[in-house]
Amino acid sequence: MSHHGPPFFFRPAGLLFVAAGQFGAFALVHALGWRQDTSFISMTFADGTDAADATLRGTVYMAAYFSAVLSAPVLVLASIFLAVWNRLRPETSGPTPQASAPTDPQ
Image: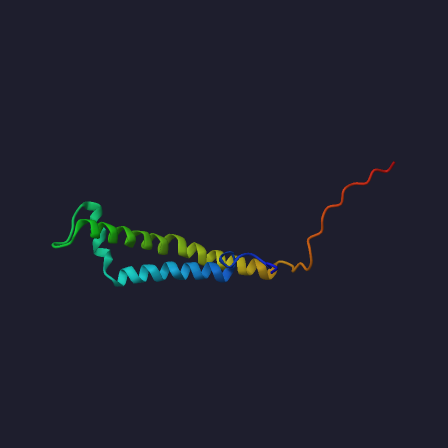
């Protein structure tokens, strides 16, 4: 089987797929109400909340938040730039030409 082009995650659609996953993960943990568990940073926990569970949920929430706020927008912009680049770049067909070795004029 011949492989044409870059792997899926290095194409514009793949970058958008990853960004959507990051936004989706953040939306999920936010909808679950895990934001309140980020208070573990100041060592304050809601009454009746297990500290270990709150720390885990708060850490997952913060990772999803930073991923959605810092990484996902970069991936969206990169997918746009890559799509424009791919459209403007001339198509190459066939193998890339190899540099020929200089011949000895003797």
